[in-house]
Image (cartoon, rainbow, N blue to C red; front, side, top):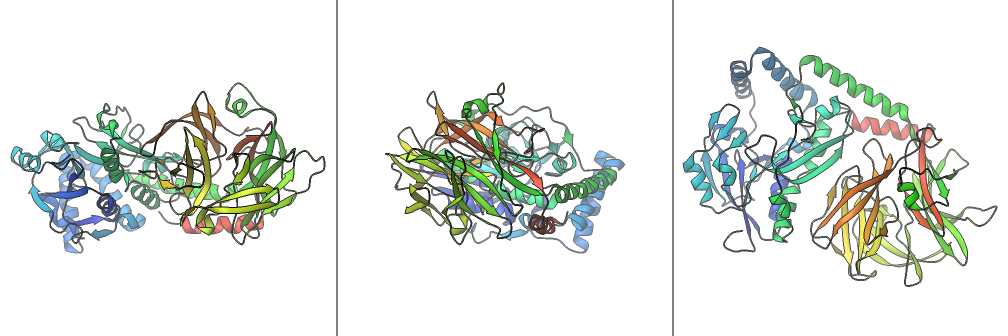
Length: 574
């Protein structure tokens, strides 16, 4: 760190003080971190005028210069591909919100700048020794790269923690350009991204942050936007880890990959790309909507995790086409086992918390909790002999704690976390502390995991030092009751990569403190492809000698047809 050991100083490689929107958000997130400050702008002298949008003759001249350079260096075929892609990107795909220009001159006022002109050798760019010395004199902790090309040489070690650069793609699958395009072309359900500390090896940096986002198959522009904006917090999160002494990954070995290097798509590939986008949209329309049911088994949760076992499940469905039941949780009350669940109405587009007495040979469904807003996920747990619940109520913009006195008598105890649209809130006590896992309705609900903690169930609850602690559509959102085996905490999560509620992934938590979190996937609970509910699973819980889970199939009815049409309309566009 700088002379003040509690402060991080950073530089930005840029073309000036105008940034793409997602880059501006990166900078603003860094400025929001206490004791992190910008010290230097390293400006690309060749493209300094690119910091303001060109139009008219300026844009034409730039394209002409680019065409000539490409012909000279890469040949006619690659030139045709690049020009075709550039025209498609500009006139068909369009510029999304994340790439709109944002002026940060006010936020970066007073920050020193130096203009650098690099030496090109093949595909690499090298800074002059004098420029490297000037940058080094600022005693920077890290440099964030938003300009220049593939840089090599002494500049990589001119700051304490190196040069940080984004690669918007899973480097184990996709290298090269354009970002977030080939995932749609190859029908990949996830779009990866990494923030890396650059090394001399191309696409072989030290991984600082990694995430996986759901691919948007209908639109390259939307897929790129979501991935760019979804990574904008990462530099600030790495800086936070450094300040908290949790950045040991900075010393990990560089990534290794043999992934193919993609280049600009050819005209024929662009045509196939658009055909695949249209096919994806048709599949979405044809798929229908989820019809969830509840399953009951006398096997243990571990039996479901064990690949060699196939526990028997008795399924229960709503008798009508206008509703479904999901998110089951069991509880023993006065000697009987009750099953609580979400009962969702397609017509009202809302759910309540319902229940039935599993020990009753002819049970009737009762209402446990009903509100003028949507309720679901009646997560139940016992503490000091009392039964509690933290149902999802994101429309109320809070996470609340209820005491369950009887199946239809839920007394509100308190608000645990106000002003948050929490989804699937899952509290668990582990290693002497309470932890609350959830996602947010307004922040990539299936992708970003949030974590809060408290010394007691009643609080005070505080956010983890580095939320969101995980970005992974395959294994972030809670999916039921965690459990402990041999001292390790296991957390069921939803894999929503293919579609919402596709399967359950079980993670073993490997680090859990107020400043650090990590986990690894160890098993999955997937639907039986030959069964009646072959489309997915997204909740598993246990209690009273029972294991409950849910499953779904895709159906058609008037209500979900209307919602699917609205969803497709929102996703129209490249």
